[in-house]
Image (cartoon, rainbow, N blue to C red; front, side, top):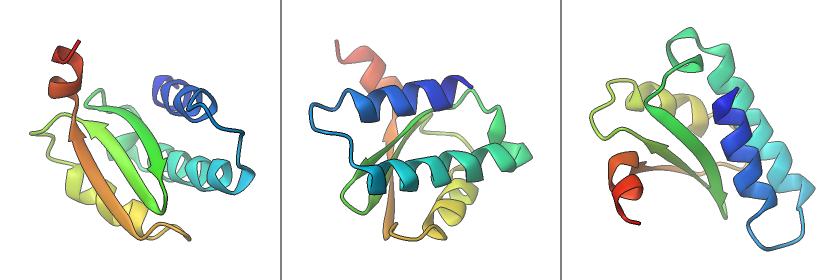
Length: 94
């Protein structure tokens, strides 16, 4: 549930009006992650965000399920790319 909260909060607070197409794509991504037992409760995955047609996943750099996550997310309509951001770098860049 924390992944959903952080991801949806980030989408709503991005400083632009809510785009329901973007929101639908983000919800599909969150659902896919939640439906996969190896990903659903992974503390290594912090957030999912959309940048145009790219899903940006903030996760631990050494997380062994990154490939699985990328494969699942690329199967979503309107997602053409998946990028990963190391959560350790984001957490220390205060």
